[in-house]
Length: 173
Image (cartoon, rainbow, N blue to C red; front, top):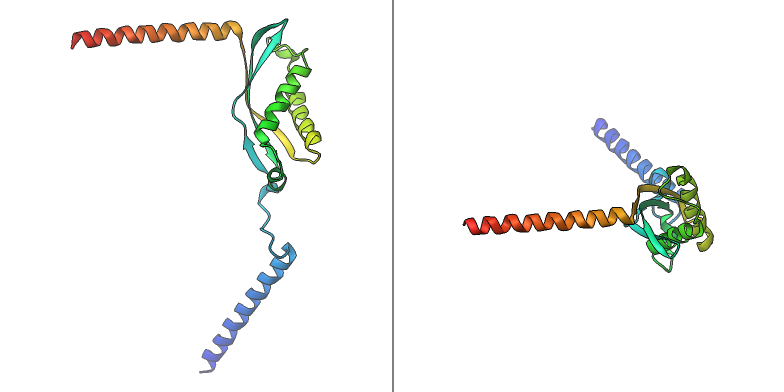
């Protein structure tokens, strides 16, 4: 009987201490606050492919294609009145058109660190708070007008060959 009473008292003490600890931990965090996310609490947001036509001498030389990932504070991004991808896309266009000295046909004129830093800093300056913490490059390409034309011709040629093969197969049956 004494063992039973001792076990019951031990269970009550363990339960009370667990409840006390949970209220203590909740008080440190603040009432009604969600728990802080792990690993810094930043969200990683991917953009769609951003395609910027590069105009030199009143003609299109090619297209700069990029896909970015940027880290943002979840609370700050919710406060934006415009969609964040639109803001990032606008800053990519602004950066490329305000830096005409960048020649995408020559790798030595491309400074990706400066590109990432400029996008981050200009977005933060425009919003007025540190919204974007880091910009990561998921994909970056440059397609000249000639490469685009060659790809289009190749696709048409392949489509024509496929149509001829289908016609032959249909006639055989």
